Structure formats: C-alpha cells, structure tokens
Image 1 (cartoon, one colour):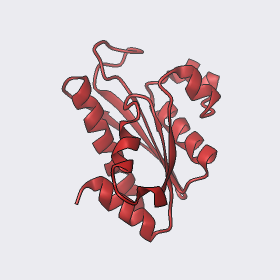
Image 2 (cartoon, one colour):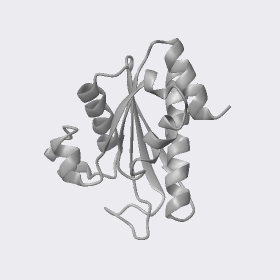
Image 3 (cartoon, rainbow, N blue to C red):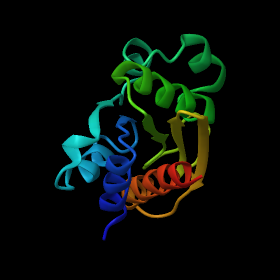
Length: 155
C-alpha cells in the first residue's frame, strides 16, 4: 500500500480532511493524493501558489513575512499551510516551498525544501536538503510531505 493510500485511509478513519498549498511541487502533491481511489472523501482541494503574489493574495502569507524571510523559508511554509487550512476549512494541511533548480534562489541552494504541516494541535515545519534533478527533488518533496503528515497524524 502506498503512503498516499495509507494516509487517505487513515484520514477517512479519523473523519478528517486535507488541503494542500504547493509551490515547488506544482500540484504533484495534490495529484499523488487524488490518485488514490476514494480520496474525494478526505481531500478538499489545493492551491498551487507558484507566484509569490498568489501566496500573499490567496493564502494570506503576509508581505512582511516575505520581505523578512523570503518564500524559501520555514516561516513561509508555516504560513502557507495555515493559510490553506483556514481557506478550505480542513483538519490538516500540507505546504511545499523550496528550490528545485537549476539555480539558487534567495541564497538557498538547489534542493532546499520546507514542508509545512498544519493540524488541530498546531503547525510543524520540516526542512529537507535534497539531491537530484528538478523532477527528483519535486518527487522527494511529495514523499517528504506525506511522511510529515503521517508523523503528525500518528503523534
């Protein structure tokens, strides 16, 4: 059983819901979740906030946070997750932001990723340092996000 299938099953057992806010993964996280039959019972939806303006206008990431910490930051990942959780009124939310390459961004090297996980007990952020090409970094980010959600659900 895939991690996504296991998570969808567990969310359904808990009568819990999930939303996503993606930047670096460009919708791949939502796609992985919705590849699971029956995911419509738990997946509310997602926002692909690739542009900073979308992070601010749709997810409510404060301009001041972007100015102080940038979008490749734990603070931004936290705000994105909390923003989409509030927007879609879900139990849990995942966010992804980072640098897939080919160049550094905001002084962060390629492979720097922040994953936000927001839930009823609060929000956690996981920082990853990934290797590989753009596709490998994006795929590993999706895996990391699902693992982070699993850890929060199981805690």
